[in-house]
Image (cartoon, rainbow, N blue to C red):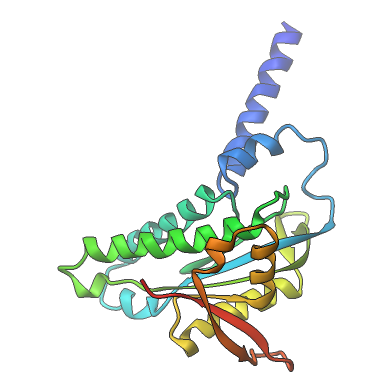
Length: 236
Protein backbone atom coordinates (compact mmCIF):
# COMPACT_ATOMS: atom_id res chain seq x y z
CA UNK A 1 0.00 0.00 0.00
CA UNK A 2 2.82 2.38 0.88
CA UNK A 3 4.59 1.63 -2.39
CA UNK A 4 1.35 2.13 -4.35
CA UNK A 5 0.64 5.39 -2.55
CA UNK A 6 4.18 6.63 -3.22
CA UNK A 7 3.88 5.75 -6.92
CA UNK A 8 0.50 7.46 -7.18
CA UNK A 9 1.82 10.55 -5.44
CA UNK A 10 4.79 10.69 -7.81
CA UNK A 11 2.46 10.25 -10.81
CA UNK A 12 0.24 13.06 -9.54
CA UNK A 13 3.30 15.25 -8.98
CA UNK A 14 4.56 14.64 -12.53
CA UNK A 15 1.08 15.38 -13.90
CA UNK A 16 0.94 18.68 -11.98
CA UNK A 17 4.45 19.52 -13.17
CA UNK A 18 3.53 18.81 -16.79
CA UNK A 19 0.39 20.94 -16.52
CA UNK A 20 2.35 23.85 -15.05
CA UNK A 21 5.17 23.60 -17.61
CA UNK A 22 2.69 23.32 -20.49
CA UNK A 23 1.67 26.95 -19.92
CA UNK A 24 5.10 28.13 -21.02
CA UNK A 25 6.81 25.33 -22.96
CA UNK A 26 5.99 23.28 -26.05
CA UNK A 27 4.88 19.65 -25.50
CA UNK A 28 8.25 18.36 -26.74
CA UNK A 29 10.20 20.51 -24.27
CA UNK A 30 7.83 19.59 -21.41
CA UNK A 31 8.57 15.89 -21.91
CA UNK A 32 12.31 16.62 -21.84
CA UNK A 33 12.11 18.81 -18.74
CA UNK A 34 10.25 16.29 -16.57
CA UNK A 35 12.97 13.73 -17.28
CA UNK A 36 16.09 15.77 -16.52
CA UNK A 37 17.69 15.99 -13.09
CA UNK A 38 19.07 19.54 -13.31
CA UNK A 39 16.43 21.96 -11.95
CA UNK A 40 15.45 25.05 -13.94
CA UNK A 41 16.44 27.17 -10.94
CA UNK A 42 20.16 26.56 -11.63
CA UNK A 43 21.44 29.81 -13.16
CA UNK A 44 23.46 29.49 -16.36
CA UNK A 45 24.55 31.37 -19.47
CA UNK A 46 23.28 30.23 -22.82
CA UNK A 47 22.88 31.51 -26.35
CA UNK A 48 19.29 32.18 -27.33
CA UNK A 49 17.06 33.75 -29.95
CA UNK A 50 14.75 36.18 -28.14
CA UNK A 51 11.43 37.21 -29.70
CA UNK A 52 9.07 39.98 -28.63
CA UNK A 53 5.59 40.24 -30.12
CA UNK A 54 3.14 43.01 -29.38
CA UNK A 55 -0.28 44.00 -30.70
CA UNK A 56 0.02 47.46 -32.27
CA UNK A 57 -2.61 49.91 -31.06
CA UNK A 58 -4.40 47.51 -28.71
CA UNK A 59 -5.75 50.44 -26.65
CA UNK A 60 -7.67 51.64 -29.70
CA UNK A 61 -9.02 48.12 -30.28
CA UNK A 62 -10.20 47.94 -26.67
CA UNK A 63 -11.86 51.35 -26.74
CA UNK A 64 -15.64 51.13 -26.50
CA UNK A 65 -15.66 47.40 -25.72
CA UNK A 66 -16.99 45.87 -22.53
CA UNK A 67 -14.46 44.32 -20.09
CA UNK A 68 -15.57 40.83 -21.15
CA UNK A 69 -15.05 41.70 -24.82
CA UNK A 70 -11.59 43.12 -24.12
CA UNK A 71 -10.49 40.03 -22.18
CA UNK A 72 -11.86 37.68 -24.85
CA UNK A 73 -10.04 39.57 -27.59
CA UNK A 74 -6.84 39.51 -25.56
CA UNK A 75 -7.15 35.78 -24.87
CA UNK A 76 -7.78 35.03 -28.54
CA UNK A 77 -4.76 37.06 -29.65
CA UNK A 78 -2.40 35.70 -27.00
CA UNK A 79 -3.64 32.21 -27.83
CA UNK A 80 -2.76 32.82 -31.47
CA UNK A 81 0.73 34.02 -30.53
CA UNK A 82 1.29 31.18 -28.05
CA UNK A 83 0.33 28.52 -30.58
CA UNK A 84 2.88 29.92 -33.03
CA UNK A 85 5.61 29.85 -30.35
CA UNK A 86 4.86 26.27 -29.27
CA UNK A 87 4.53 25.02 -32.85
CA UNK A 88 8.09 26.22 -33.46
CA UNK A 89 9.46 24.69 -30.23
CA UNK A 90 9.86 28.00 -28.43
CA UNK A 91 9.14 28.84 -24.79
CA UNK A 92 7.04 31.68 -23.44
CA UNK A 93 9.13 33.66 -21.00
CA UNK A 94 6.27 35.94 -20.01
CA UNK A 95 3.06 37.54 -21.19
CA UNK A 96 3.30 41.32 -21.46
CA UNK A 97 -0.21 42.74 -21.44
CA UNK A 98 -1.14 42.56 -25.12
CA UNK A 99 2.02 40.73 -26.15
CA UNK A 100 4.63 38.23 -25.08
CA UNK A 101 8.32 37.47 -24.85
CA UNK A 102 9.46 34.10 -26.17
CA UNK A 103 12.86 32.41 -26.22
CA UNK A 104 14.27 29.75 -28.50
CA UNK A 105 17.10 27.79 -26.90
CA UNK A 106 16.61 27.95 -23.12
CA UNK A 107 16.01 25.83 -21.22
CA UNK A 108 17.13 23.16 -23.73
CA UNK A 109 19.19 24.29 -26.71
CA UNK A 110 18.78 22.85 -30.19
CA UNK A 111 20.75 23.16 -33.42
CA UNK A 112 18.10 25.40 -35.00
CA UNK A 113 17.02 27.92 -32.38
CA UNK A 114 17.34 30.91 -34.72
CA UNK A 115 15.57 28.94 -37.46
CA UNK A 116 12.69 28.16 -35.10
CA UNK A 117 12.42 31.83 -34.09
CA UNK A 118 12.25 32.89 -37.76
CA UNK A 119 9.62 30.23 -38.47
CA UNK A 120 7.64 31.49 -35.49
CA UNK A 121 7.69 35.04 -36.88
CA UNK A 122 6.42 33.73 -40.21
CA UNK A 123 3.72 31.73 -38.42
CA UNK A 124 2.57 34.83 -36.55
CA UNK A 125 2.50 36.79 -39.80
CA UNK A 126 0.45 34.09 -41.57
CA UNK A 127 -1.96 33.59 -38.66
CA UNK A 128 -2.61 37.33 -38.41
CA UNK A 129 -3.30 37.36 -42.14
CA UNK A 130 -5.94 34.65 -41.71
CA UNK A 131 -7.38 36.45 -38.66
CA UNK A 132 -7.82 39.65 -40.66
CA UNK A 133 -9.37 37.75 -43.57
CA UNK A 134 -11.89 36.13 -41.21
CA UNK A 135 -12.81 39.56 -39.83
CA UNK A 136 -12.78 41.38 -43.17
CA UNK A 137 -16.40 42.48 -42.64
CA UNK A 138 -15.41 44.28 -39.42
CA UNK A 139 -12.52 46.73 -39.96
CA UNK A 140 -12.34 47.39 -36.20
CA UNK A 141 -11.14 43.80 -35.72
CA UNK A 142 -8.17 44.16 -38.11
CA UNK A 143 -5.05 43.43 -36.05
CA UNK A 144 -1.38 44.22 -36.59
CA UNK A 145 1.37 42.60 -34.52
CA UNK A 146 4.96 43.87 -34.34
CA UNK A 147 7.69 41.22 -33.92
CA UNK A 148 11.33 41.85 -33.02
CA UNK A 149 14.06 39.17 -32.78
CA UNK A 150 17.68 39.19 -31.68
CA UNK A 151 20.19 36.41 -31.04
CA UNK A 152 22.80 36.55 -28.28
CA UNK A 153 23.88 35.31 -24.87
CA UNK A 154 21.37 35.38 -22.01
CA UNK A 155 21.42 34.43 -18.34
CA UNK A 156 18.63 32.07 -17.34
CA UNK A 157 17.32 31.07 -13.94
CA UNK A 158 14.67 31.72 -11.29
CA UNK A 159 14.08 35.33 -10.23
CA UNK A 160 11.66 36.90 -7.78
CA UNK A 161 11.03 36.23 -4.09
CA UNK A 162 10.51 33.13 -2.00
CA UNK A 163 6.77 33.64 -2.35
CA UNK A 164 6.85 34.06 -6.11
CA UNK A 165 9.59 32.79 -8.39
CA UNK A 166 9.54 32.57 -12.16
CA UNK A 167 11.95 31.11 -14.69
CA UNK A 168 13.21 33.82 -16.99
CA UNK A 169 16.10 34.95 -19.16
CA UNK A 170 17.79 38.33 -18.81
CA UNK A 171 20.66 40.19 -20.43
CA UNK A 172 21.55 42.60 -23.21
CA UNK A 173 20.16 40.25 -25.86
CA UNK A 174 16.72 40.55 -24.26
CA UNK A 175 16.91 44.35 -24.14
CA UNK A 176 17.95 44.58 -27.79
CA UNK A 177 15.12 42.28 -28.92
CA UNK A 178 12.64 44.48 -27.04
CA UNK A 179 14.03 47.64 -28.66
CA UNK A 180 13.89 46.02 -32.10
CA UNK A 181 10.20 45.15 -31.64
CA UNK A 182 9.46 48.75 -30.64
CA UNK A 183 11.36 49.99 -33.72
CA UNK A 184 8.88 48.18 -35.99
CA UNK A 185 6.66 51.24 -35.62
CA UNK A 186 9.41 53.55 -36.87
CA UNK A 187 10.06 51.50 -40.02
CA UNK A 188 6.40 50.45 -40.40
CA UNK A 189 7.56 46.82 -40.39
CA UNK A 190 5.74 43.71 -39.27
CA UNK A 191 8.90 41.78 -38.36
CA UNK A 192 12.37 43.18 -37.65
CA UNK A 193 15.48 41.13 -36.85
CA UNK A 194 19.10 42.07 -36.16
CA UNK A 195 22.27 41.37 -38.10
CA UNK A 196 23.40 39.04 -35.30
CA UNK A 197 20.20 37.06 -35.70
CA UNK A 198 20.73 36.80 -39.46
CA UNK A 199 24.25 35.48 -38.88
CA UNK A 200 22.84 32.81 -36.55
CA UNK A 201 20.24 31.92 -39.18
CA UNK A 202 22.89 31.50 -41.86
CA UNK A 203 25.16 29.52 -39.51
CA UNK A 204 22.29 27.03 -39.09
CA UNK A 205 22.07 26.66 -42.87
CA UNK A 206 18.63 28.27 -43.17
CA UNK A 207 19.43 30.16 -46.36
CA UNK A 208 15.87 30.14 -47.73
CA UNK A 209 14.57 31.67 -44.50
CA UNK A 210 17.31 34.30 -44.57
CA UNK A 211 16.19 35.31 -48.06
CA UNK A 212 12.76 36.17 -46.64
CA UNK A 213 14.34 39.24 -45.02
CA UNK A 214 15.68 42.42 -46.60
CA UNK A 215 18.22 44.90 -45.23
CA UNK A 216 16.93 48.11 -43.65
CA UNK A 217 20.43 49.46 -42.97
CA UNK A 218 21.82 50.46 -39.58
CA UNK A 219 19.71 52.21 -36.97
CA UNK A 220 20.42 53.61 -33.52
CA UNK A 221 18.01 52.03 -31.05
CA UNK A 222 16.96 53.71 -27.84
CA UNK A 223 19.58 53.25 -25.13
CA UNK A 224 22.35 52.17 -27.53
CA UNK A 225 25.12 54.41 -28.86
CA UNK A 226 26.22 52.14 -31.70
CA UNK A 227 23.81 51.63 -34.62
CA UNK A 228 22.49 48.10 -35.18
CA UNK A 229 21.91 46.44 -38.54
CA UNK A 230 18.23 45.58 -39.04
CA UNK A 231 16.38 43.38 -41.53
CA UNK A 232 12.64 43.34 -42.17
CA UNK A 233 10.37 40.58 -43.42
CA UNK A 234 9.70 41.09 -47.12
CA UNK A 235 6.15 41.92 -48.08
CA UNK A 236 4.05 39.17 -49.60
